[in-house]
Amino acid sequence: MKRRNPILFFCVALLLIVPLLPTGRASAGPQGKLVYSVAVDLVRGSFQPLGPVCVQTSVFKQTEEVVWRVRVLDIASGEDPGEGGKNLVALAERGIKVTATLENGVSFPMRYGSHPGRPGPGVAAAWFWTVAWRIPADYPTGTLRWWVVVQDKTGAFVRFDPIGGGTNLPGAQIVVAKGP
Amino acid sequence: MRRKALLLFCSVMLGLLLLFSGAVVAAPRARAAYWVTVDLVRGSTDAAGPVGAQTNVFKQGEEVVFRARVLDIATGQDPGRQGKGLKVLQELGLQVVAYLEDGQSFPMTYGQHPAQPQGREAVAWFWTASWKIPDTYTPPHDAAGLLVPLRGRYVKWWVIVTDKTGASVRFDPVGAGTLLPPVSIVIDKR
Image 1 (cartoon, rainbow over the protein chains, first blue to last red):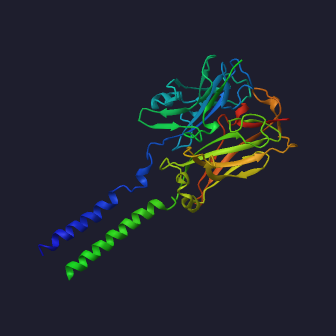
Image 2 (cartoon, rainbow over the protein chains, first blue to last red):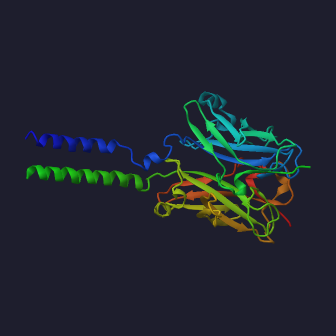
């Protein structure tokens, strides 16, 4: 009897503990941290453009303006935490910060705003995050990796890399070409 | 004898428990949801500008390539596990389709990019579909009516991700619902 008890105890303990252990698959991803859905594109800004303004592009010339546009949605609700500009307090309370970063270490805090900035009567506007970077005239030509990070007061942290990030695919980087 | 039976019983129970806990995780969730991001790049067919670069402005005869990254929200990971989980994709019944507002749709395929890497070149797995714009294609709207007027005409687009469980996620470009140029594919004559 005395010899059976330790085996029984061991088996029961295992049966109780195993369900509490995380599985390999579940622990593989950043569970609980992907709280924001983030979509990003790049468009040509209106400052000294050498091509059509406000169209998507990943190829810019020196002196042109790169504009990051970011939509941040709360995954739980599928909604913009700023409720299309109607709830700026909620954004402040959450402490949401959106930052675009270049591989050379330069980073650009983004701002939440209406686009177009001053819509006329009957003109639909969308609220999202933007920032512009004017490429210096003497900036080296070539490719430049970039990413966007969204974080808040709770420690949520979502990094967006362009599709194909980590590869040499041209769409995954900013291409800086010779300017005028 | 009774001790052996007890040991056997406990082992079988433990095995079943391990098997069961794994199956729960591997099976498609009842309510799957995905993190979807999409961009457009210029394809290599009859290109009138830099190939592979992001753009939403094309000329007739060029190739629009839709590129989509789909992540499982629960894990933050690609369900296809960068090409190592093709069976999982099949089991999930994941379908990714690009739509144009004129009714055309383009089922996307999951693959490796670049398709034929050189040496140790890094690759990424994501979903793509290409649409070669017919030389005679006329989009429904005049691009002069966009908030930033452009030459040519435009058509709106979106991408929908679905799976066997009934999950459905729609991706629209940033600024959807407005007349900002990036919400559309602008097509000009060659």
